[in-house]
Image (cartoon, rainbow, N blue to C red; front, side, top):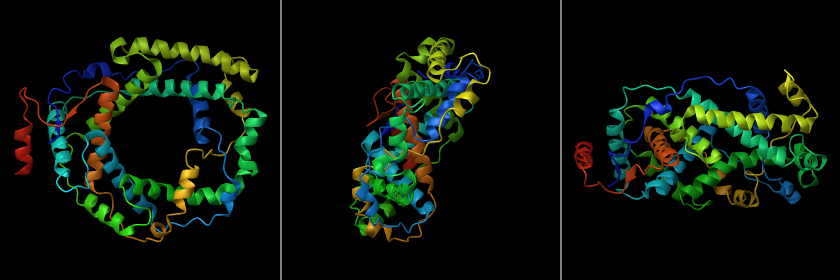
Length: 363
């Protein structure tokens, strides 16, 4: 049946998530600025080791519009996430109703909280800063800050070929990658356009109850994601220790990082314009396509000629996708941050109202 359990949100304490304080930790701008520098190049990443022969391949050119690809990608992602999280296959007739019941029962739980408000800004900023510290720490260990001579060579001349020469190849591959992923998520052959069309028609007909509190749910999901990120990085429960204790831990990590970082560049950690000086000493780097341009993706792209020739007029994103994806994200973050298995395969025996809600949904 599928039921968002009525007891699942009982341990959720909004006051513990309601932290609106703005962080002003010394050196936070340095960590966030260097993180942005690394993000612009998709670093840290494993070295990209392309086969020079790839440049001679004639990759198919996608005819679908970017909007069409985004819609197909979202539909495929919804099917994959729902199958992985709930064991519900939206392509099998009748199973979509189980997801509708999950949304309906989730709505009933959230409707009791929808009039409440909270501001998780403090958690969001702290998680972002801690993630930046993790990213910079890894980059330092890999010799990326600043890049060594050998590292610069691997980043700018992958496979012995200057990165600009890879531009056209990577542009085509970047357009094909979402469709390659979509065919895998929908379990259709990369040459079976009729199968893809049939799967998309099923997904397009999907109907789900509207979310009762989408903004509240989005804020709650973001807050839980921040807490889960801190928990995974620090190895402690942020909500059990509380925001002040977690802030002190992140502050201590930042205080330990700055001298190490400055020493690597031969600068003083106390300089008022430290970030600007560090950025001035760093080279401009190309985007590193390690996760995109793998051998498997390149091989798959050569099988996409039938899909690439499609020029369908795909409708705009349907509401079911805009409801289903946030539902999956919310349930996933409840589990990651709090260990809560919110969705049960069938109603429990302790005062469950799922049957009543299901009857109302079917009426």
